[in-house]
Image (cartoon, rainbow, N blue to C red):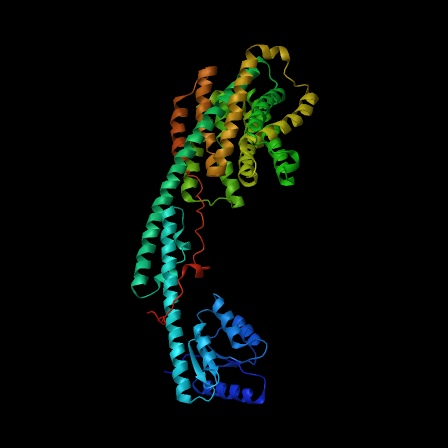
Length: 522
């Protein structure tokens, strides 16, 4: 078959005689079926080698600017060109010592300037075949290295099989290719098993956090109802609870030295704190305390469960989490249970408080907005406790003018009695629930985290019965079973797997250099 295309560099002095030799050599190489590039100096030779791919260099010893020894040293000292074969050109009688020195520096062979075509063909064919074998074996070692590094990555337990960089190895038809195929199949199975186990652990951990949040938030509504029975002050109550939470969170952050200074906060951080404080306290907190003073605590708890459906719709519209059928069915079951409770669980209360129920329906929507905002915009660089503490300070500053306008401050003398105990309990439950919720949303996503509303509803009903003596019909408990089933069908968002190390590039340092020619000692 025709020979492999070959680019040849010819080096010779800038005079007519050497130009003739260079032209003769180029024509002879082309006659053998190879491509050639001829230059007249060592500097130009190195430029050509750095810019193009060559299979063989024909190098004259005597050249302007850089002699052959300098060019040869430069070629052999570079990782990119150290395996490029070099044939030195010499006037056999005059330069034999130089030829020996060049071969000691790494040249493959030599060729006299007065060469025969048969000798040229033999030398060129031998070098190009050695180059081909060297390339084949170097590539083989590169692929063995890829497979070895992929196996090391597999041991870490944090990898993605599609990113291991061994597809080209698996495409080989030899034993290495079969080994890579078996390894890739095994890696995929291990990956799926490990990913499922991590997902189950995250689901279990998230469920515990979710139940804790729901249990704490569930007691807030009955307590706010109890506070309103003493004297209704929704804005003043929110100020007191936020002050207690701010003192606790800021104090903890200062002690742990996690509180950032104001100058370290970016505009995005400050914007988040302002918006979160407004949504969380000025809207959500005041609205819950206000509605709880007008409706039975169990009804308010039941309405809040619609937060999960609102978050699901927001996340689907914003495409922050993929809507799937399992999640949709789970949320649907929860909604069915809630509507049964609303229609049949408290018929007497519903008939007399329909207007306030409509107002209460705003609560799950604003809660859902808070969930999505936390999930998408929370600064990752700020400690959760410090972030919440700063938000509480800002919310207090926002609520004070509102309380002054409506004359809604809680009288100090009331705090020395039963109301003071209720406020302390509400502050402890509400602020701790929010801290847990921030952690929950960061680890499981907004859709799953919003399901704490289901747990909050169940806890709210239980606390309402215990603290307020509210009667709960049997149909309410049956409907809550649907809510629990729906909760179990909504899983946390899929965990983003860590990217493996880049296995396709920068492998030269791991591949041993091939010295195919035996050394004198061998």
